[in-house]
Length: 326
Image (cartoon, rainbow, N blue to C red):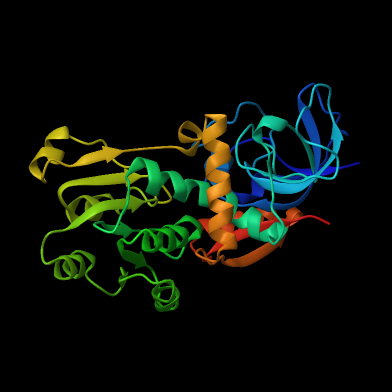
């Protein structure tokens, strides 16, 4: 019998159970995939602990994976058996050895990219793409701040922002992470545990502040994020690792320089099939051209997913985390 991680009630890592599940048969428009590598993301924690409500109980978490198509449902037009594919859209269910998923969510993986590389990067890279190319259009006139700059999304934002010509400032929580982000090309890296973040930003920008802040932390960095922005700056909240951002009085945005504030999601920006496919191609091209250096620092067996999420939640990881099958 195939196996999957199953969650029967919200909670901590202990609620993640490694269980046998029924064999699957693809429905019309679906394909059956044998997973090879699965991406680990903070959204998986949000579903596990109940911050986001799962559509049903029990459920299998996970939103992205890489695998091989082994069976086709009726009406499948583009996929074929043997295709190596990735997805980061669609219903939950990636923490599994096998799964059925509509073919519309699949993209073929070009040669030259390993399964773990893609699983570690696909959702995070697609997130970086819409944040930099759609939510706020970054260019060589941009000074941007990235919190958790050594993390899975953060390190891609640093690299891609630099590629687009921006001056990139990153915050990190340790000196070894600081060295890592400096090596990625950030113009300034700040250890928020030992350095004054706002003073460093003020000195670097000549008191002007930054144009955009990419904040995946939430509650604990919110005040710093707003105070780091210059006039007409944009606060982009794309995650809440420390908890949700508190309610905001719109007058605060006025008083701090006519600021903008947004809470975008990948699932809105990539809901259009053509946009989804275009973004995937651009991401893979960036990786193949080596403009993005991939950091798969942590790899766990699928059955050890609870440990992987616990270490991600506790800030013990840097770069990306993946689960592998077999």
